[in-house]
Length: 553
Image (cartoon, rainbow, N blue to C red; front, side, top):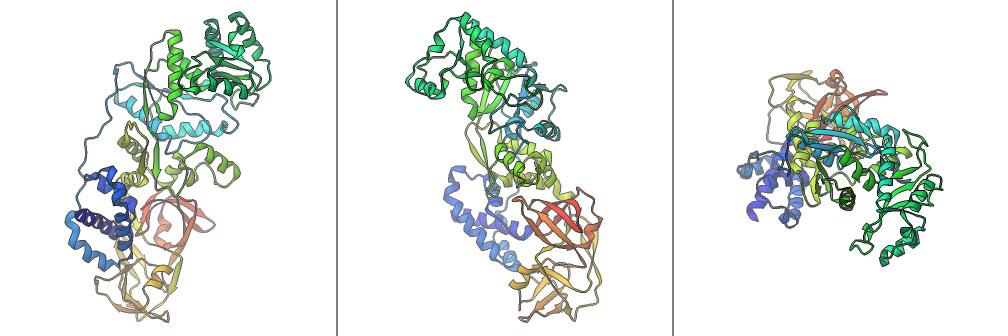
């Protein structure tokens, strides 16, 4: 454990020296890459937090000295063999499907399963169908008209190669009705008028209701009457074993009545199929060969198989994957329903609000589609529910954008002062990137601004204005020049001749401050790094403020 603590400290120091501070979410993925077992995470988590806090309190010269003692423990990442595990029943006629319900934008949590289907389709050069699963849904989880376009935009951004013709379930109601009648004719389905409380009681006791016993001819008549019945008066149920070990599997609903208007077909239809019914039919008719779906849909899979067996249809390969919980996303809940409510209420500025974690919001923050794809591929077909640090995605994205992202200076909550006896320096040249020979010019003109936090923490202590010279601020707030010597002392971010700037963070809050005037040359959409703050995407000018969206450290 002693060596492990030193290794944790080595990575924490390295990260803090690069980005100004560090956090546990950045350190843990590095330990996993070099052999830490996930079952040991709880045991070492308190050490990680303690060491991170210790490192964040250090001044820069302390970090440099401490890192010299442990830098040998920092290992370059060994690139593991990449690729997705093989699937069963591989052929040259494989067909996958993406089946989003258009109640909102695709977010980082549910994108995982869709992307897995798409990545496997690419792996096997298979066909991918985009099927909008737009049956009527529930009152709580209603269809949003704009979601159709947002879902398509998300798949296009993620470079998902699906067939040109998009399939809409709301166009296929007559097909579902046809197969409902066939199930009734086979004496495998019946129309039920029983109230919900009676049904629940019957299910729990394993008893069939009287509606189940009517003959086929009468069931067909009751089916036709269902199209004129009031909402809630009737449902079509499938006949299963009323003593099935899983009460939820007993005589499940296949069709229900809804008078709500549908965004695409209005009130043309009132009788709508459940997921169990429409997918059992479509997976067969559309020739789907492989279904990758979440563990939360296991009972729906069992019901599909039950219906396939009634018709004597071949079963596609169905593989369930565990859900993922994203750790470190500032308490946000990845939920289309929750995001829909927040967008409707106006709490979120729209579906690209960073708190939705939608593909639109990630794109606007500067997260690349390639990063999301690699993130999902790295998770793969997890059988169990897992927790994945958001820093894993950030680490992937950082590698893709770092070389092209020029460095600039930004200070939040700025405090300005004039430096007495300052050298006659009006401009300096600093590298746009540590690995580049290209430089940018920074003006030193009149007042210098640093963050209030740095200003208060470094009074009466000599420190260096990064890339410039050393100064000292006395207890009365006056600043004076000390020397040009680049000593191993604290280095502080600063700006002079600045422009007002603000940055939208993932939690939806704005951080306001000042940035160097060089950002005036940026083009909208350009990714940069504010030194010791993080990577940001320039989103434009609003009321004189230069606005950026925060990507990650």
